[in-house]
Image (cartoon, rainbow, N blue to C red; front, side, top):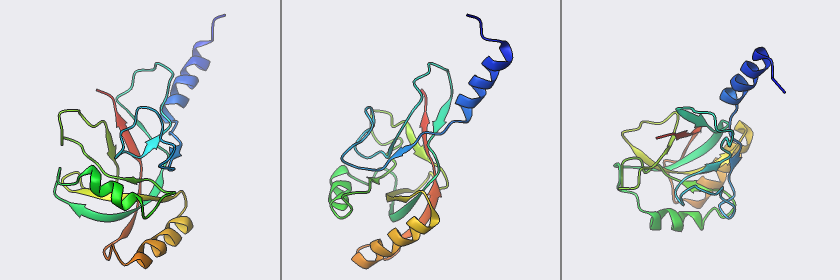
Length: 152
């Protein structure tokens, strides 16, 4: 069966505009994601693309640091404080195994540790209050962002 060109173009355009649903539960990451990455649904359609973005979400930036100074052990310790919400950090350019996930609305020259705070501003504000109650992250702040999968 042949698909009319106009319908084929609409399907390709729709897949290009699609955004991957975030999977914020640290106990249930998507296959193929590393422990320091926030996982999200990625396309399985075989369409060539430069990048694919997650749906927009809010995160609480807990800490900033020099590039490549953050360690998985630190993320794991912080994750224990927030067992239902994924703690994540960029590791782009930090090891021999190229990190293909980056995040929007951040300075790429500075690395950070963040925790998923929800899809809405209301959820994020409530989660930020929870983070501040711990007293461990005095400079914690909200950021709306997307995770970006870059294809090599």
